Image (tube, rainbow, N blue to C red; front, side, top):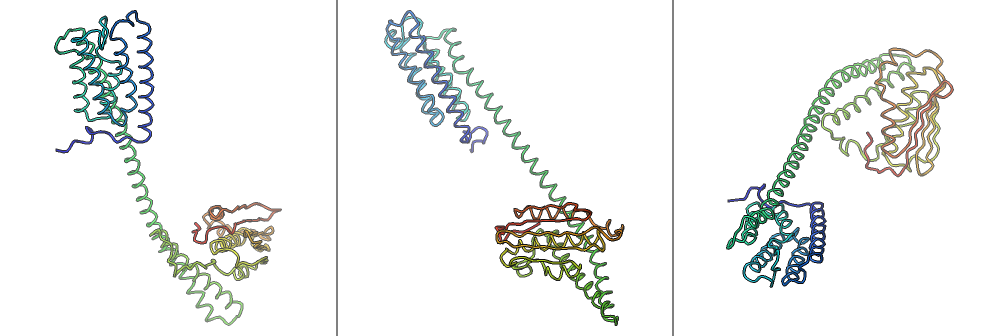
Length: 401
């Protein structure tokens, strides 16, 4: 029959072993000092047996630190020392123990019993305690005084150690249950969050895709039917922007619903987010590029594109008609971006400004920070300036948020 886990020898961690070893060493030192002081201070130090008794006790004291790794061996040594002392008291007084006030149970025996109860299964531990108690009484010439001393040195420490062991195991069990409950709560919260995310993704897909598709279809129809070149060019820009929006929305829905980014075939490593020149031209922004864009990883190029894209969107919404300048520099070890718009020339459309989520700049800051860069957005003499600096040491396979 297999022994239950709560009755078997506990698996001690490195910290527990170190604590027990320190406790055993300290107890051994205290017992040794106490016994030496008692030996030197008693009037019967010259009585026969005092020195052998001290030697046996010191031997048992020295073995206490070994009880952490070899509890049965130390327990057996305690039984041998106790038995020799008991036999010396009854059969040969003055040889092993003194003739006056002999001590049958060594002082360290109580500590040994405590370690045995903590380190061994309870049946083995109490068997050692019983074997220690029998010669300590001793059973061939028992007295009430010896019975009291023997039980105080064996049974009482065993019961105290058993209580402490049960208390420690209870605390550990409660801690494990609390950790499991906390893990279960986190798991349930993650499941609820995933379900809500998928529901919101489905709603977003159904609503946004429907309206953007209508915009693309109407823009395509306007491009085909109109005879004005400017109107045809504007309709083509609207159609391309709507198509890109649908593509990015599809990728976003895949990330939100499955948590998996698009495959490498759909988003290659050299994807830089888009054409910066076309992006700036669509918003009539002045673009100034300094350095070679090819010196930065794709993840940094995508971050630069998103910073410019979101900054131009904010300028179009909040500063209509204001000139916008985009400056991008690639000095070699980083990519510096500055998007600045002058004060608005006319009032912003309230419907357009309230249509956003208000999280654009926050998302940009998080993206740049995750890549190890710095980001700032501030008012600038009535206008607005967005700056970002991204180190080129960002890993090429990093995934920006």
